[in-house]
Length: 253
Image 1 (tube, rainbow, N blue to C red):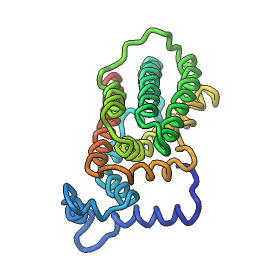
Image 2 (cartoon, rainbow, N blue to C red):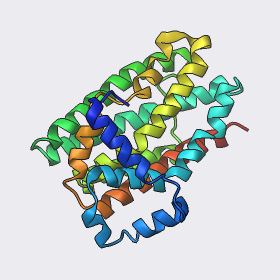
Image 3 (cartoon, helix red, strand yellow):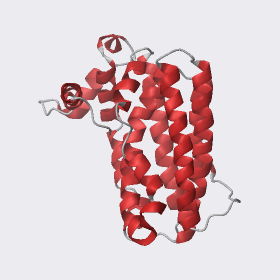
């Protein structure tokens, strides 16, 4: 994640750790108590508290992503170049779709701060697409590629959010998701750099850290929305992230 002012960062960290304190009831019971959340408890949560709760609830998915077989295989040097071509082909389709989704959100919500937030996300996707082509060339991906349904479910849901979601839904979903995606990209960058070089893996480095101030800007949008809807968006997007990696791994053997 990008650097934050020291006071803001420490305050956010305290809120995140609140959900992980040991206590007699344990984390699972604490979450159950807090997330009778289909109703009134949400009214007492600010955006940072909601993000901390969602991250705690999605910790099992984050754990599955952290230990994912595909990433382990990449780090072990056992992923064939054909699979890396598939990765690049899937990302080419996903990023192009996500860029269009963010541009649509920018026009749906033309007032600040939402318009500027989505404009920055769209510009980031355009830059990511440019960097991806270096990796695609390095692994020999041509222009023809047939995407996998399981991988493209992620961008299909982002497109659904662009049509139907609120700024808060999108902001919380990406706050929850980009942390896991960034860690995965950092691991792929480090694993692939010795063979392909810095230039080819710049795509992964681009996503390894969120833009500076991203969390604060996103939280400002989370605060404008309906918490249960935003929580649902975060849960689904993270599930589609896991499906993306599962679909890539299914093609290994």
